[in-house]
Length: 74
Image (cartoon, rainbow, N blue to C red; front, side, top):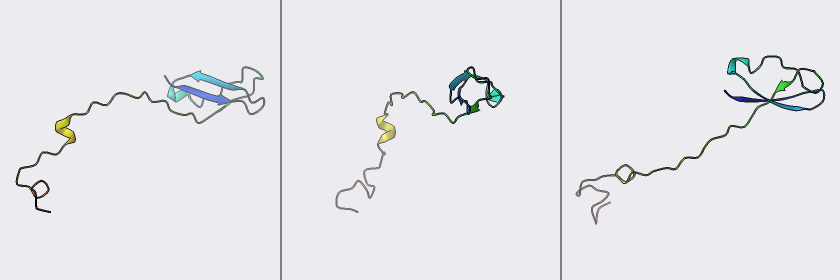
């Protein structure tokens, strides 16, 4: 489930809740002053993964007589 960030417009308290997406905008009271909090736009976090390069994919395969690989042509 996603984590949503909220801020209270009255006391400026920041709150985070783990909720279902369909519940993201449901009214939520501030734990400090009980006013309704407003959902904030959050940043996304991505996990960086290692990229494995496949030399057969990264380098084009040409016939020996192609115009781009033959010496003296192009």
